[in-house]
Length: 399
Image (cartoon, rainbow, N blue to C red; front, side):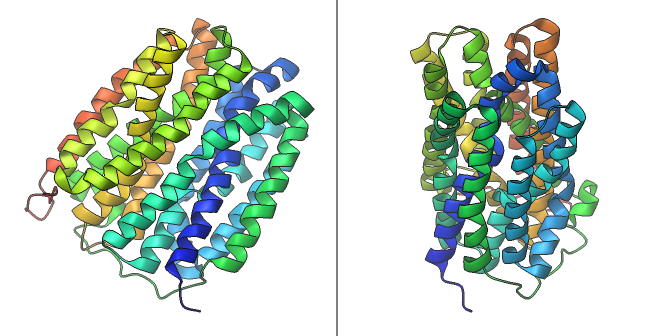
């Protein structure tokens, strides 16, 4: 069956909204009620999410190859099913070991449903070019609203029915929306993409300093941006904000992501990739610093919005860099390498910030350290786009 671009992009946009909202953003709302009922620390809770994200990172390259061989329909449908079952099990946990065991299938679901497989599906169907840029923008604009939709929704479900019932409702929603969409509307297997030449093979990233630098920037970038997304609601509650106020401020993350991705796609040709890397990876430091210093709600909301603009556009700069800096390579494999290290960064955040909170009694030290990491990531991303390739030429950084 021939691919219908509008149907493909619309399907993936809708399922990314639901998958991100339920499998990822709901966690930040569930931390406080789980901690209150079970008596577990934030470090312990964050460690389980870190484990799930680590599993997702380990599987990133393999999932890309499964999509090439089996097609997105099989891979993303399986991810939806496993995710729904993991949430049902999560609703029943009473022991930390059971919770950590459930992190393994949750990681499989994350690897099979979030942006990495969705981007590979779009690029595999549409190829390279402006049409693909716009398709990725639409997909991430809708997906970027996940926190805006699902943080307040999860908060409402928890307040009304408790966190266990809330998880069952979210599991049903994930299964009813994403599983049929992935199963019936995504394409099956397609002819495999050309393999990477030796100069650009990700498995040997040391051969190209750009790939190593981009991977490092991806790791640091997601390490910093994930932390505020996961712990903003618990931090605001600890600072005296009510649940509704905390959820409202956190929901700005989705709106900021949409704005950042729109601005990046619109203005991207006007500035070099090096300039974009510097700006986008540095911007989240503002939100982290304001959160650390417990700024007034209005100022903190503005900082969270700027934070989210940078974090959201980072999602698009990875495929942009894969397409622009490695034109002779298979997109799925290069992007999977960057996605793997981004997921490792995302995985480290909940555990690291949770443990720092347990040791200090506050998120302030962790947020400040991550703000400094943003500055480091910005410089690394800038140098990655400016560095010469392993084959001797300078990288193309836009016009």
